[in-house]
Length: 563
Image 1 (cartoon, rainbow, N blue to C red):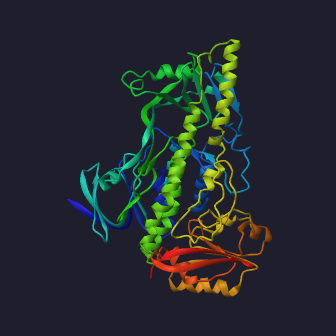
Image 2: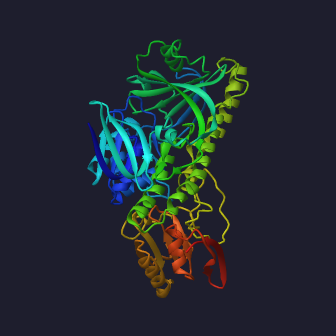
């Protein structure tokens, strides 16, 4: 027997990105179904860092505090330690504070958070279950799909019964990971290369911190005579740890791999009690999909890209994709957005994925930056010199991995067809430092409002026109009328704070539903063209110029648009 289920959006894959997609669609009033072949259990958690922009998304969806209170001890120091083993010799130490002591950067209302996937994913699953219009089906295997042009018919197998299920949706989103069956069915290629072979050893070691003198740390990077050979990462801040061993494909063959021996080498002692929970080999790679969309089928998360976990941007890049794609699906499903809006998803997000991949690979290369390590374990003057030189070199070269606010919130959508350029030059793209700006394509800046909210709390549902005291009422009315005629949801917020007006750089700033700036100016020249551009309906109209005037000066950007 076969059943037919109809739903606007079907999501394949129930990891953090798939769950985020379901939560985002619910946030926008769009019903969806999420299918996942497992029962939702996390046997080998990988994700641990929730980056700033992802915490901002969780804030928007209303569960940032749940993540803050996940159970990771807020007084655990998150330092980086470079050593030969936990009971060996120190090369260098990069001191970082605990979550409690770490300040929230002034450029955001949220700071990063450590929350292992074994806690984060159940939190997100609970939020998805609680969200209106979300139907989650575990133990359902994706089989195939057929894009009918006006809908997508997807074949599933209910694993416990063997029953076949057909889901008819208007859109299908593949969030099914690096080995994506949805991407494979689309015959979309991946470009990139293998970086290394690795094995993750997940273990329980109660009281481990009391068995060594390296102090608390988020990560311990181990260097031996052969160079960097592994790292130990805190998982729950208590007794669960993950040891990653680097090596060749032959060296990491599980039939000959001695996990216990590597754990003892990392500990530097043989009498520390531990229990290996799981051993998982994996290939560290940098890969990027050729396309993000084919017809009514789109991809997100690891189904689009793989990157070294050095920097923790894999899941966080996927959550950014959810923020970009969610409102665009809402727009086309509700009829106020053109289909070209979905084409802008790849145009905007693929360069960001490439940027994050390059960042992550550079961080991995910094891990390996240990030249001439032969004497690193020797308790001799030569060994001390080698440790000092390698330690300083690795500390300096890996610092950007831990201090990457510019990467996390400074990404911007250059050359986006749905943002209105104003002729201003781009700011430097600095991974470490973030410079707030309302240049179109950028994330709208954070500032605290008198009522205790962030400016970011104003965004997330509709387009928002932020109007400051010098803005003309006629210009505001022009935009409101143009958006109303196109049925594009628009809210207007008036702000009188001169400090925020200076931060926002223009007296009128139009912010998209995902929190990125679509247009800014001190005067409105063609409100209709602005409305058409930001909803993806102006891609082929020719010869119209959009102007953004600043006093006596005018910055003009030309768009190619279509009636």
